[in-house]
Amino acid sequence: MDCTDVQATFTVAETLLTGDGNVDLGDVDPSWFVNYNLGDLHLSATYDPRIALEPAAQPELMLDIDGEPRPDGAMDFAGADVP
Image 1 (tube, rainbow, N blue to C red):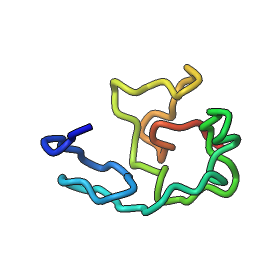
Image 2 (cartoon, rainbow, N blue to C red):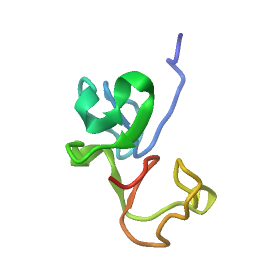
Image 3 (cartoon, rainbow, N blue to C red):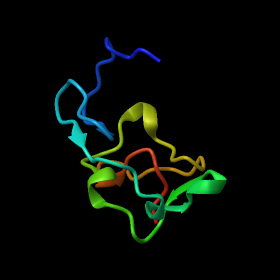
Image 4 (cartoon, one colour):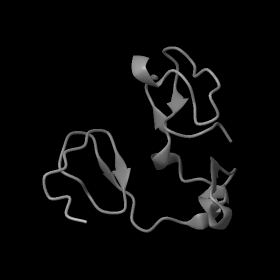
């Protein structure tokens, strides 16, 4: 897949992406997730904190991966469920 024109902001990836606030995390460690091999990508207690916390939920992302409400204006786990 050619993603040369993709722009991202405040995103964590295995390689550094062009854009503001991005983090190069390196290789994903399956232990960060409850059951990576079976597709359960809920964060485990051993997640790398650089992958998750963000200042506040964006209005269009007010529900987590399970459809549960996110905190409004508080630190939150972006794109994941609270471990």
